[in-house]
Image (tube, rainbow, N blue to C red; front, side, top):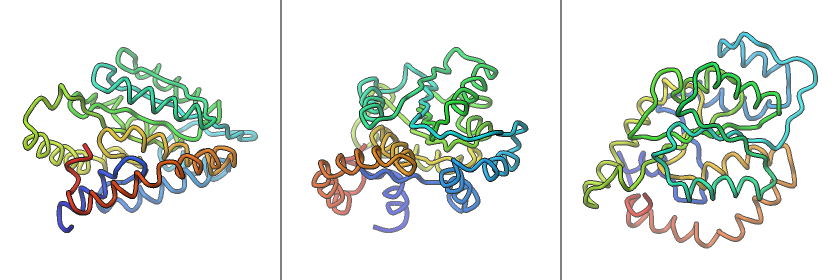
Length: 249
């Protein structure tokens, strides 16, 4: 593959391959995201990251990292509830506590309170389920979350069958356009790990991998899961090389 197909394949990884992308040329955001993950347990560096982000409050005392991941739902009417529940269940089965937050009818102050709770509980990541067709712009867009906390943020863009009630060829074109549009506006979102569209499983795996850095039992659970799905992932990898990314939306 080359050109646009290569870019799209990087973003739209098959289920089971949790690759987080940042915007094209956004090396600073990529480095910041890596630092957020690597230094979750180090107070001094986290406060430097917070200062860089413009966060006025500082972390003090002993930082206790816990297997906790937040899940933000930006629009409950426009995601797959079954896949969403599987994502949450996977995290919980891996030994991770989830804190779910629905921003549909919430305010900026309440969202800040939610982030403060995540930080207080020692969360290792925050997954943002983001409706591509029904965006919440401005204060509660993905950029809001990445600018208000140094906890790593994972953006999961989602669409539903109702959003794509068109023929298969047009649907594939729309998916390509959507991915590229999101890829272009990602610089405005700051340092976030961008998943492929509707890659619920990959968002869960990415978050669990972060937790696994600090908790060996979770890492072991992930490895056991990977062994179970290894053959499926290899098959999908071969298909994406021959058929392109269309079959994986």
